[in-house]
Image 1: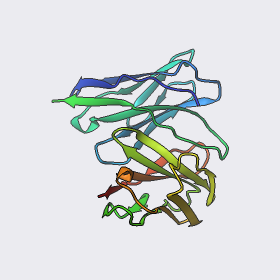
Image 2: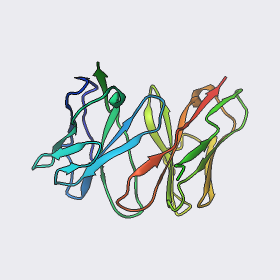
Image 3: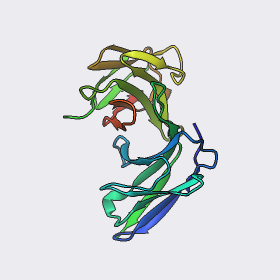
Image 4: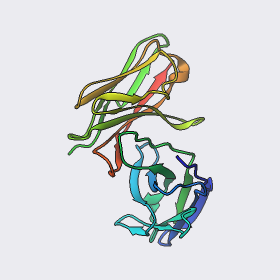
Length: 112
Length: 113
């Protein structure tokens, strides 16, 4: 699976959009981009994933560049409860050989 | 559904003792994963099962660690004998099938003194 690069930390004001970048320049054609987050002392939580098109759900939006070498997770109106470590993971899907390998992620701190 | 259920939530044991961590997956999920998280090493995948069969145990640190999944509704991770460096939070996660996300339990915080 391709490796990802994320900034170690970011700050965001409550109510503003949080834009979390992820670089995955070695991504291959069949690899998806997944985002998870981990709120302190809890298990990681799935947020969203995509292949090449932008995706949106009730939690966030995922913007993937046309060359697929980077992506941005957008939390449109960040709240204090969104303070967490956000993990960007690239992996191929399908089949039984499934692995989710977590890097160090980005610690997002939402400030009042 | 109650989600992935792990027990115990906290475990304190003395060095050299056997420790067994338990996981009950979400009903119908056919893939199960054990992770370990420490400040130094982050989240590490230890082993994962598909349809109760271990697929990849390359992350298991050493022979003191063993994992079983005797049926679709139960898995254990055993450490024998335990050592202080095994202190960590251990997470179990399960997945329902291809193209679905993984759901994590709340973890077991293990302290070996």
